[in-house]
Image 1: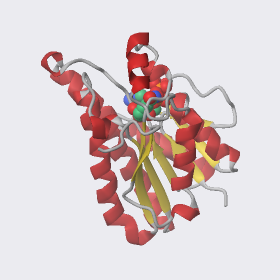
Image 2 (image 1 turned 45 degrees about the horizontal axis):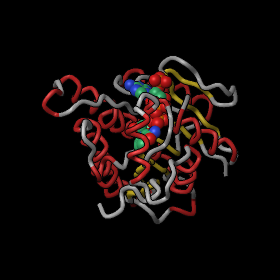
Image 3 (image 1 turned 90 degrees about the vertical axis):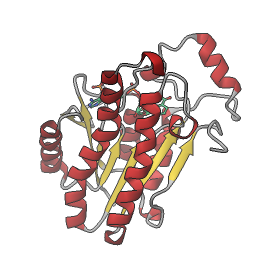
Length: 235
Ligand code: NDP
């Protein structure tokens, strides 16, 4: 069955792969972007910064006019601002949390309205292996991504009886713009810690997301699903 899907930050990287995977299975897909729309005209691009509730409302309104109430929400928009704790300014901490965690709360709250009314919904939050493993320089990022687990599990308990699930996907190292500036030495070091012996592909994250959003995954809620080649194992 074709669903109305909204992916935040679906204009590039992992979000774009997720949006394209839904599109390929026949869903009606809206993606949010702040400036550059996605390259493919088949996705409905709506402007939205997830730190602004007004923009989120407007983006949902546009998507829902075109596609109907959002039935599948993928909260994917995220940023890093890496620096060691002793040098991390409070503004760097709060900005990352405001985007990655509070942003997810804002879009989940907006999406939940229609899902409750419709009696069905799927919420998938994109976290990170850093949520369970930690990473030097990522006190802000790891905290924001770990918070998504608690958020999803609280939503799962609140809305579980309405056929609404809330799950979290934890990608490992996926080469995209977000890590494009990492020095080669750091990349090679990361590689030695990945049991799969390679980086992941955005499409591999997308496969987990579309599964969690499927009818078949209706009995999976509050789950944390790693897509990391084993990098986070044991945490
Ligand atoms: P990219 O940098 O390629 O994409 C980030 C996306 O987030 C962009 O679409 C960007 O939109 C959007 N975004 C950032 N800030 C905001 C904001 N305030 N409001 C709206 N949209 C915003 O990175 P990835 O594709 O790699 O990352 C996607 C998600 O996956 C992130 O949450 C990231 O933390 C997570 N992740 C990535 C991993 C990786 O190795 N790549 C590993 C683990 C998790 P715009 O184009 O407007 O800037």
